[in-house]
Length: 309
Image (cartoon, rainbow, N blue to C red; front, side, top):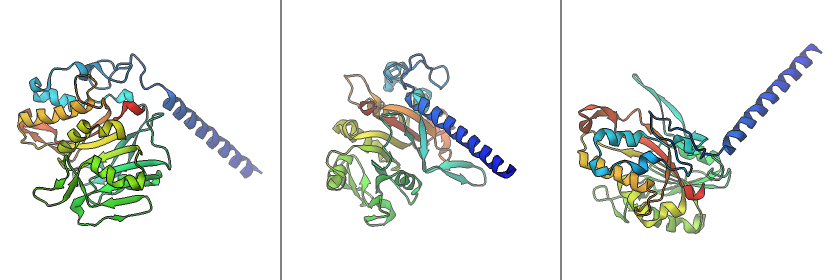
């Protein structure tokens, strides 16, 4: 009898704990992402606007006059209060002699309206390099995952019922890669190619990109063509630099990201809202434009499209 009572007490305790957790998540998820008066989580930067866009990025000086330090501040900045519930998909812990860190993951916003629907979502994943943790995690969530990488020497195939692989690379134009000979396509061309498979008006819940510098050609094309604004709900990208890149190269690439986030009607952009920015711990190096101080030459950034929030 005593054993039965103990078991009942444990079950009741577990039930109460579960209910509390669910209530907390419900409250958190329904809490407005645009509460006025919340402060940016980085340094003493300004308050987030009620429309989800921030004064700091909209009003900061032109990119052409930014210093290296200001550009790095911009790259590390995140409007983190704009997403109340960000979850990592594909988290894998990597350990070596000097470092234990996570790799292979991307941040996904699970706020109401922008969250992928369980069992009814579409993911484009560019850049695999035989690291399938993100793709498999999204497939476990029930998403149809379309994965792309021409560098693996693997032909197109279905890796599983939900993961479909293509030996195509992402670029700013349809062409063969100038040095590798890989087949490269724009996101719009790839979408048209797959329209018969996932539908001609399907929204891409998450577009993930880790394409080793090709992002700097692909993102401008996706912004200019309107593909991102019209077809993509969330964007997760690892951006890359070289430690010896000159200042004008950094400025050019920072401007690409500012165009992506632009909300000014005089600028071409999708108004994408950045909710996560994290340096890749494996991509730290003395950076020439920082006077050879240690800096990130690879960062994981994530945005959502406010059109669908």
